[in-house]
Image (cartoon, rainbow, N blue to C red; front, side):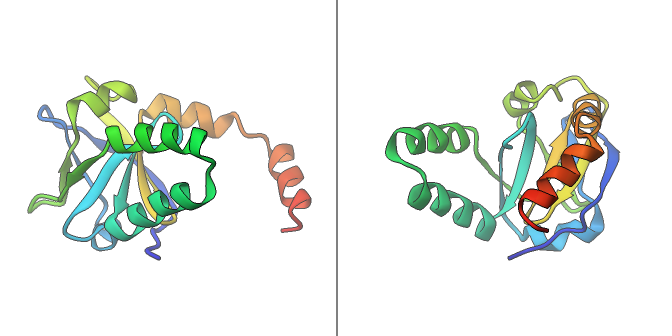
Length: 145
């Protein structure tokens, strides 16, 4: 499994819809990767291995009724991409619209273990601040972590 430095940083989106991927995250993406909707209101960049594993998990663990919805949601929004020579990715205009990135000058690039998430900065900060310390402690206690 690929692992990314778990961090986040704001990056510029240029007029063509390209955003730089941090150098420490680029090699794990590989020469081709999948961009799709993330589980939240974000874009997710999956190395091919992680994308295939994710889709196989949906196929094997989710009942058919829900599986069809998940497969449709993620696959219909998927795009096979690669980085340009300067380490940038061109984000699909429709996907940018779906996650409130269209027309934005910056986005938050977040390394989330086996994939990279790209968020609208305001949505990312709102999501991050919505999680209380007590909630985190409760979850850790519940799963004995």
